[in-house]
Image: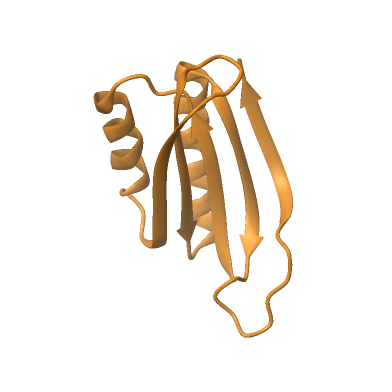
Length: 101
């Protein structure tokens, strides 16, 4: 089972998005997915990611790092245990959410 952190952060510049990815890449990842979208309500650019880590320690540190980015740029995060890579898959259950702005 992997530890997943998903985020939708309103990082306005490529430099801001790169800083988020740099902080994610400090940890040993199983996988990282990123994309960009537009907030339908505000028209703002949103940086989306899901990062899977293998250890609880890395999850705790990454969660803290991403909350800092969320505070700075506004957005939302969630974290959960993910078993999509396992033989018996079950729906994800969100353990914690964090939202600013």
